[in-house]
Length: 178
Image (cartoon, rainbow, N blue to C red; front, top):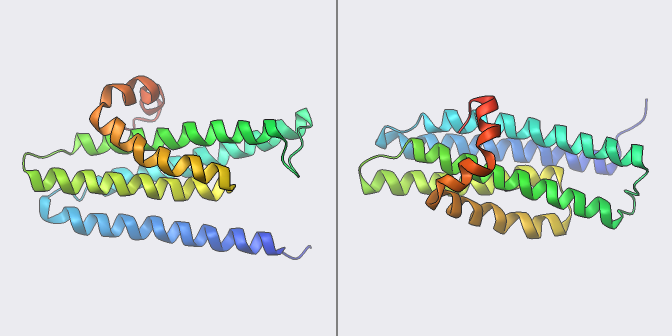
């Protein structure tokens, strides 16, 4: 049996940290939304995060398998490998932002305080989604693109939900999300 490498240990700690960050965010969100009677939003976000983790793991595994089959150089990464990962991670990151915006929209209340709290939770959930995606797509280029995409995507999809439905509605319909 081989010993874990330093990269394996680093990835394990990052997994624990990001998992803890996700749980902390969900707990704090529930506390923030509880006075407004909207704490159940965190249950919907938790289900979404579970699906997001699964989709990220599956797509990164499929990319690795495809690159191995097509003999695309991954160490050091070739341009096609980087571009392929960038496109996939950006699409998935925007998908999480769309999910968060549509889920928050379903919980909108009449008061301004409720609306502000819900939008804030959705905005921060997009950052947490970026942190999760960063676990699978760790390169600086991916983080440089995906961080603004997550936050800007949430704002765009929150203001323009029809775009979120048209781009990602098919996926959300498959899983009954959004």
